[in-house]
Length: 172
Image (tube, rainbow, N blue to C red; front, side, top):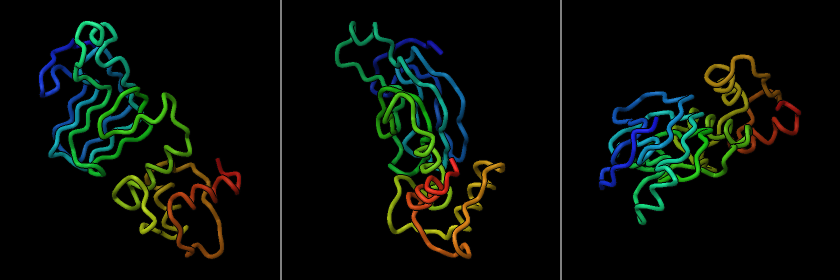
């Protein structure tokens, strides 16, 4: 935290650098850097979730260095190669910073989509059975989660339909 500002094309100082594949980066704080979380261009399969990355660069830098290059999350990898889930940030490049405090349903949707379909954002062509979505939920996300029961479990649906059916059944 607080590595300062170096306005280079590479991204200068960063709080967390991700330059290898298949890592889980979660529950960290990155603030006061050129980039809070910096993800390299050749990496994939990383899960970057529940991190607090704000104030990158610090507000003083944006006043002193107009046109600076810093961001809270700077993802140089191709879209869909890494999962960004539940991070709290204000600015992001190729990484979602939809709101300062993400909804729990959208976090579950993105995590299930990534686990079940291997990419995010959700696409209509990725459909799994209710039983498969339940398996990812209870084996990869939350073992204590209550499963969704619809018919015999073979009904195919997208992750958005699964999340909506869970909400309709009062399982949130």
